[in-house]
Structures are given as structure tokens and as C-alpha cells.
Image (cartoon, rainbow, N blue to C red; front, side, top):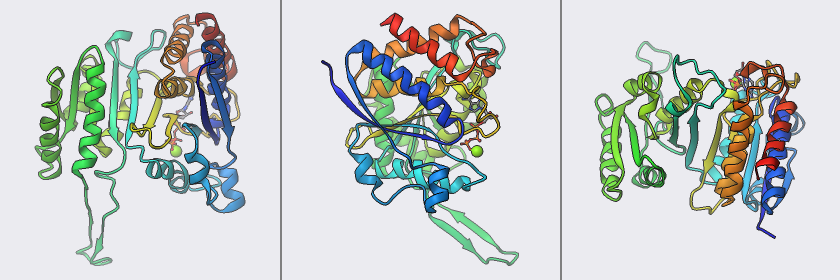
Length: 361
Ligand code: ATP
Ligand code: MG
């Protein structure tokens, strides 16, 4: 018997509730094939229905309840008709992120065989990198305010906060990831030519950290030209590390160049494993397609693969990854969801991946 992993499951809203069963199907197929045990507990909060009933997204005791799990598997939260977007986000995901100190936001960006990229002439091997985003400080501090309100001198100020601890720990994570990869190459996103205090500090910490990783080649790009190069030269990148705001921008641009947001996964990670990390697809609850059974479940399934990797089930993680890549590469349009050019459904694609996991294990 292998290990037991305890997982907190939140399906959320809209297509979150449709793709989550397919994520669980993949996890269960992997657990069976690789002989480990998953204890999944599905929670009925952190969704719009709970908010409608209770006026808050989560019960007061969520910290103890969820903190006891090894990981959190999340669908997508938000239903603007019932709960304002900022309330659903701040009341659930961002609470997890803060309380469980998930200071790394990790997003693989990979063009898969069988998916058409909006970039002409790009082949799968050309786009395969990670965006590592700082998830807790930087430009998203709420320090600042408004003065001379209502006058023609009205002024707002919002501070960027970078702590040495905060910058160094995200850089260390990114350097470790680069060191463990084949390319041993790291790109830092900066803007030290325009932002004169915080970004030069970021650059300085990068240079300092680089001394601990002599095998890793480091380059840096200003964020403006970096976004251009994501489109023009995605093959230049392996691991890209960025502050909170720059990482936010890059981690949406990344999935865009890989063809559909429906496949993109993410991890909100506490690398020390002091707290549970959270794995979720990049997409939202997509009210426009919710209830139709056509949401692409690959983002949820890929997130499951990342979670397995984090839990130390490396073989199982690779099998899940290889299974969905195989199914997509087979280009069977009766299985693939409409965003991939097919006529299939969430469950036709999810089932095909689960069967492939069993077959490949
Ligand atoms: P959020 O506010 O949480 O970022 P959003 O409403 O802005 O979410 P999404 O919910 O991610 O954005 O949807 C953006 C677009 O992508 C929508 O048109 C949606 O239909 C499409 N989309 C999102 N996820 C999927 C998916 N899994 N499969 C197919 N299409 C998707
Ligand atoms: Mg939205």
C-alpha cells in the first residue's frame, strides 16, 4: 500500500462544478493505478450558493478544517449575479492564499500537440516554460490612499512593498525549479529602467541569488519587451520569475499563446509544506458556457497532475500528464470539447483521459 493523501475539494461555481468531477476521475484512476490512497472531502462552501445563504463565502472555522489537509483541489469560484466578483475572490481563494502562505503561483505554459496556437507556425516544443509569480506582496499591497478628495488636486497613492524575505523566497523557488530543469535557464521580469526603487531592488536580489546557482543562466527583460517576446519568441523561455503584478500579466498571456484558457493549470504553493497548497485551473466559472456540459476539463486535470507532483506522487503525475497529452494529440473531434475544435463534452474528454491513465499506467 502506498501513501494516503488527504485532499480538500471545492468545486465552486459555474463550470467549476462541471470540470471538478473530471479532475477527480483522473485522480481516482491514478490512485488505483499507482497504489496510493486519496481521502477527498468535498466542502459545500466557497461558492455563490453558500454566500447567498450565509452572507459570507466560508464558515468561521475554515482555517482548522482545511489546514488539516495535505492539499486543496479547487474548481472555479464566482457567480456575478449572486455575489460580486471581488467578494467571492477575497472571501475564498485569497483567504487560502494568505492564511496558508501560498507565496508561489506556478503556471506551466506548454503548447500541446493537437492544439492550434494563435501564433502561426509554432510547434509544440517551441512553447514549454513556467511562469513563477510572487503571490503575496509587491504591487498588490493595499497601502496608500486618496488625498484632496473631490478637489482638482485629488491624488491617489498606492505603495509597492517588497521585503527581502518575500523577494528572496520566490527567487529561490524559481532558481530551484530552473536548476532542476534541463535548460537550467531563468528569466527575470523587471522594469528597473522606469520604476526606480522597487525594481532595481528586485534586480539586485536576483543577482545575489544567482551566485548560489552557478549552473543556472540568468537573463532579465523589462516587462514591456518581455510580453512582446512571449508572443514573438516563446521558445526563448524556460522559467520566468516575476513580481506579483508582472506575474499576473504574464500568467494570463502564457495560456493565451497555448491556444485555449481551458487547458491552463496553476498551483498556489507553500513550498515548505507547512500549509496545504492549492491547485486550480486558470479559468473562471465561465457563466457564458456554464450548464452546457461543454467546458474543457483539461485545466482541472492538469492541475490534478501538478497536485500529485507536489504530493510526491511523481510517477502518477507524469502518467496523468502523458494521458491528457496523448488524448489531445489523437485529435478525435468526437471527444474534444468545442474550444479545442471538437464536438465532445466535458465528460467525453474527461473519461477518455481517465481511460488513458489506466491504459498507460
Ligand atoms: P474570472 O473572472 O474568474 O477570471 P472570467 O469570467 O473573466 O473569470 P473565464 O470564466 O475564465 O473568465 O472565461 C473566459 C472565457 O473563456 C469565457 O468566454 C469562457 O467561456 C472561456 N472558458 C473559460 N474556461 C473554459 C473552459 N474550461 N472550457 C472552455 N472555455 C472556457
Ligand atoms: Mg470574471
